[in-house]
Image 1 (cartoon, chains in turn blue, purple):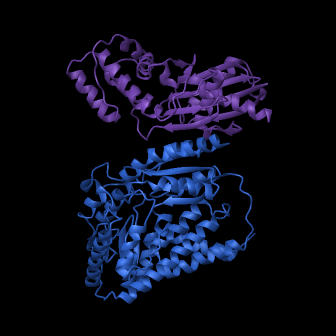
Image 2 (tube, one colour):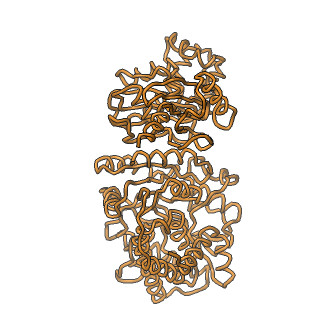
Image 3 (cartoon, chains in turn brown, green):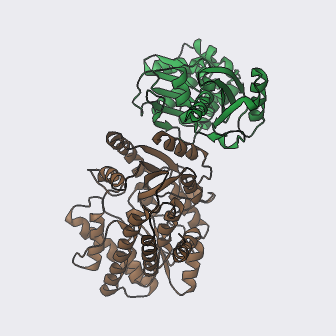
Length: 374
Length: 258
């Protein structure tokens, strides 16, 4: 069934996801200030409340030249790419950049920003469940607020923050609804399209993005789901890109019916609930953030979350997209393997390396995985 | 009825003709892999050796790194599935396979029917692969086919690291300059390959029978090192290089039965 409106929505987001640089220049040309935030998590709402657009920095497929001067070769693949971008002026369009520190590499990374705009490193506390964790993070967020006010010459009021939180919660709900509905339409929402739709959120005004993603869900619901002859999987990890890699999924008729990727669903999973003040509410979100390799969790809820997600979405298997040299993710792999074996859920690990554009080995792995499930 | 399995690897091309899904009529191996003249030459050789005409082949399945470049194939199947089928055909009762080829190392757990239960592959790195041994044989000036014999003479334990081919290469050069015996260094190289491979094997349930396959299985030194590491019998097919092609020919036969 043809659906021109749906195609237009998808095309709009795909264009942004495929050319984030252009999307940023367009936003800047419209008079907006852009504030970058380095993966994986940052309080985007504070940026939004300052009237600027938060832009996610997640690296990309780049050849490393200058980054090697500043980082060891075993620093994670995303950080290598971002460092290359910093050193080559890719991020000069930004007014400021927020750099979190949930892992060792990021902790050091935040202290050596090589871009031309000011950097605001901050720390998410890992003893998250203590009350003082919220106090501490609220302090960090107040620091970000103050610095952004100075850099952007604006006042970030509590009212603007509360409005921003409402915009973002609305967006989170819309994305969660989309991912649920999209799972029934793998012919239309292919792994590539799904990724493009979710990735575009990083380079848009969330208000505009929410309108489009709600539109996509609305249009999908009008259509009758078709039987899917291929396999369905859950993907987990930090990111699952670029398109060349996602096309391998499509080549072997593997649909993504749910994800636990830091770049995708983990961004939208946890709402910001009211907790005294807008800043404290934002800080509370980190305490409520669950099932994530980057947030301390002695119970490893991520593992049971994955098996629950696989069952809920009737997935045939789980694929770990393991970011090269990402320690927090690598530590989780054996624990996930053990659980999936126990639960009888087929599991495959593929390596994500932003410095490589050769996917033959991944192709063999995915084909073998599909064949082993037949 | 004849079916054919073609395995185009990174270092060699292999072809097998199977009759009625039961008898291996002919096999051919050319030591040149994907992107070379190897694939064409292996086809020429198998037809001339067997005397069978291409028209008599009812179905062809291609596997290996270069599987998508085989134009005559009816279907492409991954080498992991093919090795599992091939080993199950050649060595009934096999449940664990270690396949070391030119650039890949795979540990595969299979069920009684030869279907893959799970598998683990090496990272994108030449350490522990056939290429690793090839590089070392060049520095050591020992023909790769003689590495096993040299290994047998080893008396002293020499450690060669298993993390990186380039680092290991300079390590071997420095061992040579320290006047260490070649046979001891060669055993160190073989142990290093096994140490890397066993990291993958231990992720499987490691159920008996354990079968060692792929080109590197022809190396007696690596084989003995693997037996020492696993402390249990390790089986090998008579021609370990062709097991993937055998599996592909079996799958082609099964396709025809459906």
